[in-house]
Image 1 (cartoon, rainbow, N blue to C red):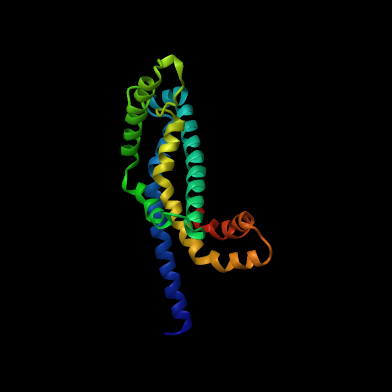
Image 2: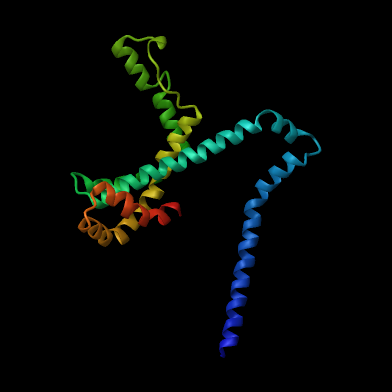
Length: 207
């Protein structure tokens, strides 16, 4: 087989993969594009126009808050826990290495139901506070889990293990020698984290 034939076959494979990727992307994007087309073009029944005039703005705002809040939260928790369990020795470290992955076994909606039942007004936490201190509902403030902020926290607790596992693998693979070099150049622990380890792990964390 000549080099020109090999190049032709490679281009054919790339073209096939590109076509498959485009088809998959269209199937994935079709529901979203359908929603936007109904909102901005308008349907025959006017349902989408009514939604756009009433609740769509709030839904989009809540979605943006969820995306930004959960993204920042899982990145902070995942990177921090990965750094601590990888680069530091402390009692129980080996237990935390695998225990931090356990939230993956709990679906987000199950955890949301559990925390909602646990923290609501008639739940064991608030009931215990009222019985212990003799409080009434007006005597104390307690955060409401049934809010966008509560949803952000629930998703953070469920999704951070993905970032934790990827960041930990990146720290184990790349950070060791670079950290030694950074320390030999006089960098402290925090400087090594922000100037050496975090930039090395950034591609994995973003992925």
